[in-house]
Image 1 (cartoon, rainbow, N blue to C red):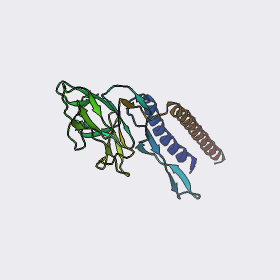
Image 2: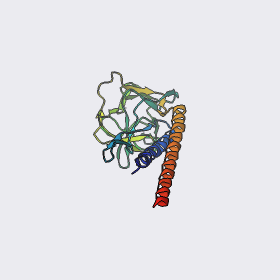
Image 3: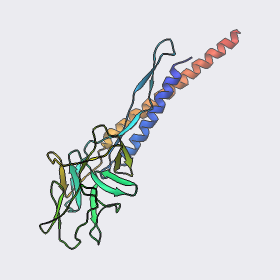
Image 4: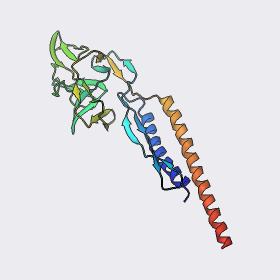
Length: 241
């Protein structure tokens, strides 16, 4: 059996997955708070052949948590996280964590995300402000004041080190383990009047896209060459029979 055929096919399957993630990253390179999706590949050894043969795995997806570029907006209802933490919002199917800190306040004083989902405090409760209480000031620890009076605190949460994140919507994630509220603000804090962009480098992603496309084409050419060699061998054997 030609081992080059299944090896090249496994490589194509892996690269197709990588192409999908790169394309999605590029499409969201300007999306506020978007976290890039990466793929970790491993190789599997088969000892069925005379010599060990390495096959590429289909890849394990994971969401990158590196920080995106901070942009100052001057809007008092914009927030960004400085450090390794996340905001929490109340989604339709449970708590969603995000780095998109753009907020809006409705007539009832509810602090909402751009998708009209409640922003949560450290205890997981929706934030309720005074719509007529004056300008909103947000301290580094998330404490919100209006006219010098404390009216609530934006919750910041950290993911366990070994938690796996699943994407929810465009900029949201949900961990497979409970997120932990931040109580130590050394190196972590809220930046009022800033937003964090996607943690995607469009130029780097385009370079990766070109490299993967070329590798995919090379694997396809290898398959064609292997198939032709097999056909030629079968044809020669048929002539000798």
